[in-house]
Image (cartoon, rainbow, N blue to C red; front, side, top):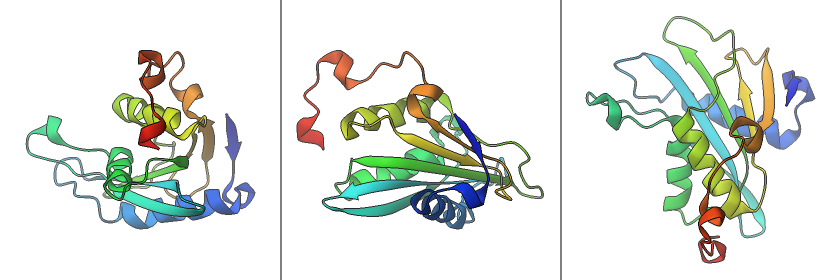
Length: 160
């Protein structure tokens, strides 16, 4: 796990985080008033593509979807399932975050699934609103001893 500042990020880390920040403003959050943006850096053939998502809440609270899963589902709808990194940023309605916002347990599991499909230990870039605290970790650091499709003997090649 690395603690970095915005200037020390790679270009792709910065672009992915900036895309997450942009989409964060589109959160549908009438209940929590908490804005979360996520973006995945995906491999689409030979080129990289950034696909974003924001949190979408629902009056039936369990039906809400986090920004990370929204980004993954958007990529999947485009037929893209190979990712290199994910960026996450959040803010409150009337406050900036002072600690990083990491993915929830459900999102960690979904990200692990796609890490196995991607064949990489997916990099997760997490930032405070002002980008003054940034942590870069891998999905295996965030979800140790994870269980995924390879553990079930699933042939994931056809899903790449």
